[in-house]
Amino acid sequence: MRFTASCILAIASSAVFAQLDPYAQIERAVDISLRHPQVIVDVGGSMQLGNRPAEQYRLRTYIQGKKMLADAFVNDERRLMILADGAKVWRYDPIKNEYTYLSQPETIQKTFGVAVAWARSEMQRPLRLLAQSSRWLINPTMEQQPNHVRLHTVVQVGNEGDWRGTDLNFYFSETSGAMQSFTIRERIDMPGRTLKVSDFMGTFLYPETFTYPFTFTPPRGSKPAADLPSRIG
Image (cartoon, rainbow, N blue to C red):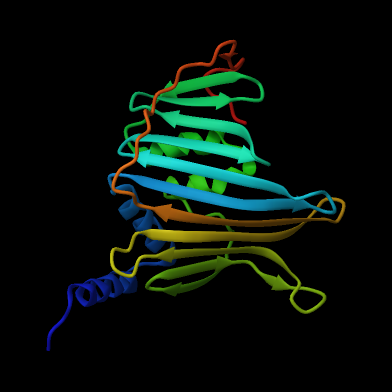
């Protein structure tokens, strides 16, 4: 019997999957992804509170070895930039025209841990994923396949199709085991019986190359954040 390379990789991936719990499977996939020479993680989605207009979010993260850039926009307006140049991690708030920096940790995963502390709420989970942390829910229901993990706290309520809770899905390459995409869906009753609805999707891209300088120069007129160096946005 002849086996193709893809068949052998799929069998190996299935064998590894059988030995891992869902969290370890997600962390392994992120680790494989971060070992690629270049990675782009493109996240987009929306968040709506009650009857207010939905806010549109976009987070694009470029990763090259220990260097990274996370660029966040809300309704097409840049709200936050976090950049690691190999020596320092910089945070720039264009709304306040303030910047912050710290010495960069020794690994890219720990660098993303710094980014998580500096990010705003709707963008924290994608950055936490890149810090190899996916334990976002308390006692979730878990579903696991070789190329898919679902973690959720979904409870059906009221009319058919209505629900509350958080629904997370992570998808992996069947051959390499690297992250391919993830979705974050959430329907939560906030104080005042205001419904918060979030719907995000992230895609991992592995280009052969991309050109980005990974350098930060404080813009003209900007100033250090008052509580440098540990400002949390």
